[in-house]
Length: 371
Image (tube, rainbow, N blue to C red; front, side):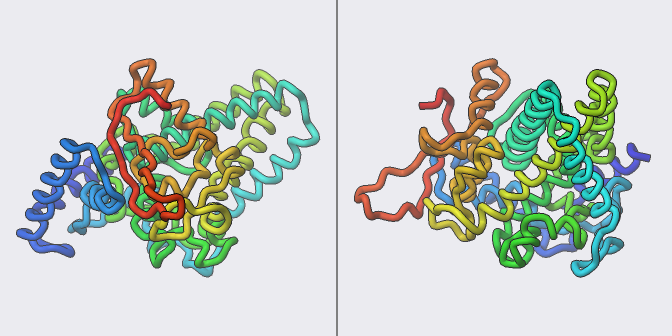
């Protein structure tokens, strides 16, 4: 069943350029494709990016054609079959309640070993998985790794229980296409609670159909591993939970799965909510993104969100030496081990006057080391 679904998405992706239907005519699509290719080659020659060029590059990567078929994959279901924006998704809500009850129960089963296990798994899932894997590698392709490293980071990410890559990545790419505008899945303009967790509990924001996948994640939809791990994204966590219980009993299970996961979920949600509400703005971006040092501490560097929205494809989010960015340090380590290449790194433009606002970021494609 999974193989046939995979082949269906692959075939749909292949027919995008041949389809006469969609938003653009055939000749227009051909022209856009050629234009994107030429622009990409030009940027690769110069290795200098403006913020507008970065967005155009992303638009070239994320196809704008619609697909002639909307066959639904088994792992995600149809968006039209899901609850509307004013109806609670009781399956997800019940799951969240169970996680939070388990997190509270963990406080009554404290041991130092369980705490250290939870800290390690929090780093594994949040930094290696979400930050370095889902976000900076799969979503923005800020650097390249061998496939086995990409898959290993993806396995770490699914243990955060934030969904598989074909759910997480398209949602974040949509957020960058419509930041704090109509279409943004989790903007504070729709309410602080909505931006934090309401968009998950209500509506169908976590459901991606074949049309959305073909438009926002064609690179992942054609990868058998990412299709499989998305459908069975709960399996690594179940295996991990069984192993923890076998080794350390209930304390390891409650701290290593329930409490650790709840803290990680809220940390990620704070990037969606808090860093679009409170904090400082170094760049005049087209959204409400801010830099938040305390969110950066909780998320291993993802809190430098204004920096990230100004330089979307940069693998480094902390642009100053004092901007703590553990995820960047992890990418640097991979580079030293020969496991990361083609690393996109943002550099702050030099201001002529101290009062001059930073409005035009400069992106450079460089090799490390970090300063």
